[in-house]
Length: 248
Image (cartoon, rainbow, N blue to C red):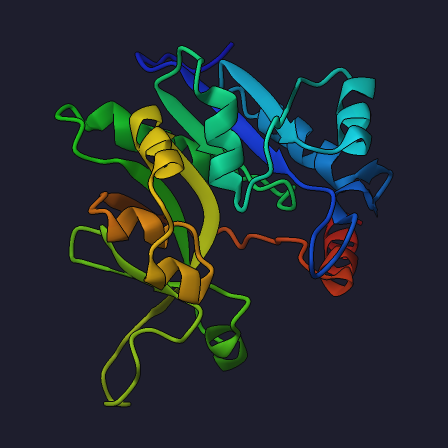
């Protein structure tokens, strides 16, 4: 049974076969199942959603999910980012909240996703456009890595900016600042997602190659939820080996 909710909530997993850093990674074996299958099944097993779909332009990924009883929506257009792929898929759906699960992040934490959805249940004035996750970073190599998107927030945990650069810049090294990594799992109001789909990319998003910056550039409100659960995104062959060790 899905958790009681007044919003209709679905999960979408955008899944491209061609990944620039690790082509075909979603169909790589991860302890007996493909990465994308593990992600899909993990999303279903949370019991948080009315429906879970993989959204893909790949025959191979479609076949893999359908072979194991999953639901697939085929992209009809070329897309530059996962939000666009999801927006096309949900455009004609009767749905309130769409949760974007990254296809290369099979270690889904149910409690974290539940907290994201709770943001909208408590947002009676509908002022929040989307919610996402952040987790604290403590190692200097993680803070400086361009592969880790960092986020800074205001005192109410609304996002101020995202960057691949360490933000804030530590000009005063005695200031006690915690750095936060953005975990690329989003919950959107459908209306905000459709706005994103129709609005052109602006310079900040283009420079950083971080799609959620587009929401900030157009004045959308992003609520960040802190989690202590460390996400393992599979961006490289080394990440896949780490994931295998975690499962074993």
